[in-house]
Structure formats: structure tokens, C-alpha cells
Length: 190
View 1 (cartoon, helix red, strand yellow):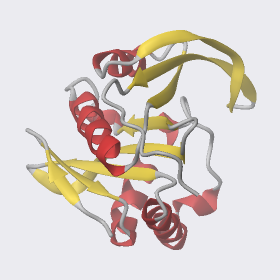
View 2 (cartoon, helix red, strand yellow):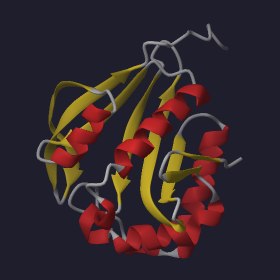
View 3 (cartoon, helix red, strand yellow):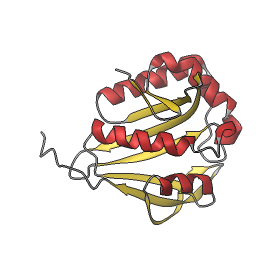
View 4 (cartoon, helix red, strand yellow):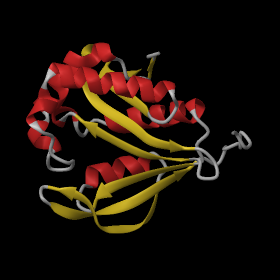
């Protein structure tokens, strides 16, 4: 079940297989840019059937409350996806945590869109699942990403040496966390 909500400048939508063509364009247009900060994708990733299958799996993951995915566009151009946000591996208590990631179209950087979308998505995911801690990583020299995390209320926790394989080598990343101070335990579930 996909849904949408809005911020001041953005339309944010959860994962939906009908976004396949829009997501294919988004990833294709940003392929070289994203490869600087994310693992490279095989050629078949940039096909409509694969994008649809990924979105179908994401929708299933959201239904099962194990992950949450958000895609955003400008209100003035709702058919062009400019960013992607993910909350993967939602873990129940005693952990009550999730791993947070995001990216933004290269041409839309520097306007605060990613921060706006991330803040709204964090607010939404905290209603979606009982989460106490949101964890994130940023490459040590990715100052734009570090700024987004800090503007969203994340605190620096330390460095993860050689933590993620990018461009054929394991790269250092900074570790950040957001603590949901309003967390209320749902109790033990079986």
C-alpha cells in the first residue's frame, strides 16, 4: 500500500511498482554521480523489469514492516523523482533500530531538498514502526551528506574503518545516529 504526503516544496511517496520508469530515469541519469558514493550496479539494474521487481520487493518489505522506502519530487514537477530515502533492516526490541540512507539527483544538490525530505521521512517512519535509534553512515569526505545528517539531528559517533566496498576498495565512513527521545516501547511481541 503506497501513500504520499507533502512538505513545503516536495511530494514524498512510498515505494510503488508503478514508479519503475521514473526510478529507471533517476538512476540512469545519476549513474556516474552515484558511483562516487555508492556501490556500482550491474548493467541489468538499469532496466525497467529490474526496477519494477525492486519496487515490488520494497512494497512487500514495507507491508511486512522490515524496511521503508521514500521517493521525492518537487511539487512543481511531480513526475521527476529527485531523491530516494531508505530505512533498511527495521529491527524490533531489544534493538528497535534501523539503518538510514538517502541520495539526491546531482542537479538538485545545494537547495535543501534532501534535508527537507529526510526530516519528513524520519517523522513518518517513526509513526510507521517502533524505532528508537536510526543509524547512518557518510564517507569521510562527503560533506554534503554529513551536513544533511547534522541538520536532521544526527550525532557523530565515530569512524568505521574500511567499512563499505566502493570503487573496488573498502572506504572509511563516519557513523551517525539519531535517537528518538519520544520512543515508547510496544512491549514484547511474539
